Length: 257
Image 1 (tube, helix red, strand yellow):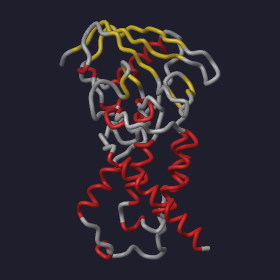
Image 2 (tube, rainbow, N blue to C red):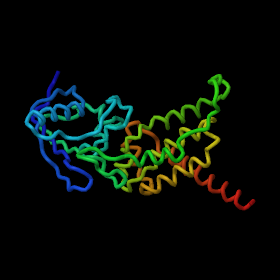
Image 3 (spheres, helix red, strand yellow):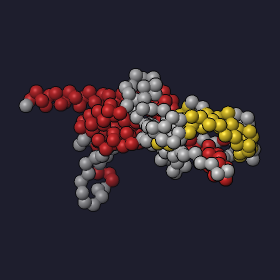
Image 4 (cartoon, rainbow, N blue to C red):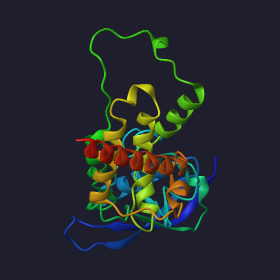
C-alpha cells in the first residue's frame, strides 16, 4: 500500500446561501492512495473535529456511484480528473504527494449553495414531478412477455436510465443547462412502450419545467464529457425532436377544434 503525503486542500467554505464564501486551506499529512476522495474528506473532518473546529459539509450517501449526491468540483472538473467516475468512486491514487487540490461545490444559479460543498438540487425534482411517470394499470403484475420491447430500444432506454441526477452536466455547462439530465429522464420513458401514453405531454411538461430553472443548450458537449455515466448527447437531440413533434400535434388539435 502506498501513501500520499503533504496534500494541501483548498476547500470552499460558506455558512449559507446568503453569506460570502471563501477558500480555506487544510493540510493532509498522510493518506492511503487506496482511500476514496470522500474517505479523505472524512479523515480531514475527523481532524477538524478533534481540533474543536467545524467540519466541512458535503453531500454523500451510497458511496457506490449510484445515488448522485457526491457532487463536487475538483480542480475545476465535475467529479474530478477521472472520466466516467462519480466523486465517491474517485481514489487518491489519481493524485500525487505535494499536490494542491481545489474543492468547490457545483457552480450554477439553479443550484444555490446550502453550506460549504452542499447545494440544493431540488430544481431537478421539479422537472421529474412535471412528467417523470407512466400510466400503469392496477391489478396483478402482467406477464413480462406481453409487451415485447426490441433489444435496441431496451438498450437505448437503459443507457438513458443510467442518469443518477448528480448535476455534473449543469455544473460543467457554460450556460448552466440541464438538457442532458432532462433528455435522459424523458428518453428512458418515451422510448419504451409503457411510456407512450404520456409521451407528448411528458416531453412538453419536462422541457418547459427545465426552462424555468436552467439555461439553454448550445451544444458545447461539456455535459457528456462530465457525466459520470457517460450519457450521450444524442438523447438531447431525441428530446428536442419529440418536443417539436408534440408542439405540432398540439397545433393540429387546436386547428381541428
